[in-house]
Length: 365
Image (tube, rainbow, N blue to C red; front, side, top):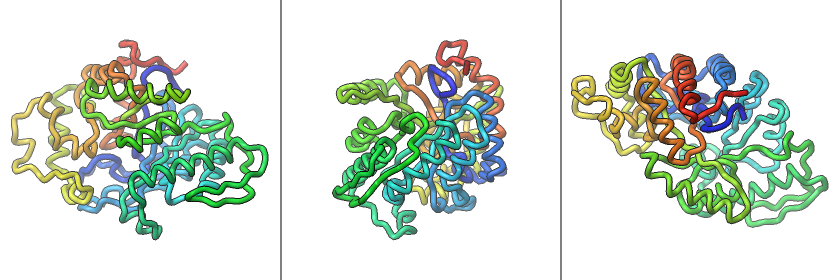
């Protein structure tokens, strides 16, 4: 890992628009050139990881959010070859990829990156994207049973020195062998899932569990329970969340930019994503909300971060908010920006040193 203490990664930069549902010139252009620049910038800044969002089609709307995206294992391999220290994850829709093929692809990426590749295992997704593969999603819990068997095959391929057969409920495979294995014996695994089945899968197979957070202090009991469940089966697990950031020199500038994003929201894409939100009756720029109301705004979260938590403010307040997440028990956060390349330099220059001074995060050494 690039650093110790509270870990920070980037999320969703492989997809046009990133996490934001904004139809404005500032929206993220997910070209390969921009992804390459961003990966090198994040590496130099000492961030811990890059996590892609696996997409096969977009959300539509005026801006066609996420229509342009890169397949994540090849994306990760390319970025691992171009960076030095940062971990790069591949996000894999498990039901779409044979475990033998995935295990070999991921190991190849891991060797390219000298042991820095990771796997973000996703067990379900939008049915219209699964339709592109002619695959019907199973029931919720059934998908996690399939995922458990998939992980068992992958892990044994990475560790076994001899050929083996696998006969299970979902895979019937013969003469399996996978050489070389991962550089460090295995890959870092992450998985998200708020349901009991999803969290159980993460506890048993993942090193990092992504959990949804609305207010950090409300997450503490669940974080404690997740780590307790892992400890009971002899495992350790980190708990992360996803969020977006709007960081500007002043609180007023940050609030103004959020209002601008809402005024230029792509509500067609938001409706297609089934956020349950509708366009506000009046322009946010015409309202009198202060920074506290902007931070609490459900509309702001829907537009800027697709309902994830959104850090909004100046560098001092952003650092303070992240310290609250650290105090609540979160081990890390994967961040989105409306425009990653435009906004990450200021965040890295101003917020990361503040987190170090607060004792929340230690610089890469």
